[in-house]
Length: 298
Image (cartoon, rainbow, N blue to C red; front, side):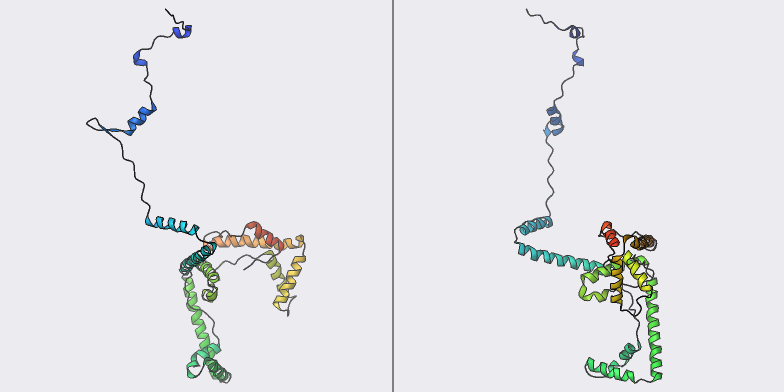
């Protein structure tokens, strides 16, 4: 007969009753319990799996289009890309046109333009011939007719200005700003008709800051040293002077430009109610350009 010799620490422990012996939990039994639902009659059923949502016809079309695009040649892809670009441009133009606002026409007339408008129908013939005849007549009008014409011009200009200012007063500077942003974009997208989208003039708009070079440029032109010299020649001379200046000499104008930028940001928030939008050009590039004295592009 074999006798088991237990260590003293195990032999000293009291025997556990069946009430204290825990039944081991098997993972499979838990999953089985969760997988089946018991009915009243004791039978069980497996829950139905949710069906995947059906793919929409639009998603199927897009997937098929992408797959077909990958099989095209580079030339065919270029044609499709160009067409997509035109469609995207049309959508952008359509959206921009809803933001441009439509102010009443405001332009300062002169006696000649008013005379032509009033007398063009009295002369027959082609446009070039009508213009010649009216030009001869305009040179010979009496002083009384000239005075009457000037009076009409002043009245028309005053009426045009009054209507424009009244329209302007019904719009906030922020609205005019947003309209001009849209107009500037349209001028780039629709170069052939850019004149239709001239920027709206409003003295309430915040003036953009100018660079260190333009600070120096404006100071030199205001000095009177270039009186009688054509503007292009004067600008070339000023640009040459600025490039030859040392960093210490330029610092005055760099500081003026920095203060002008601060002024612009402050007034932009005060007038428009929001901060200056982040420019796509990095601040580092702008600073390098300013320090180099390069005039910023329009």
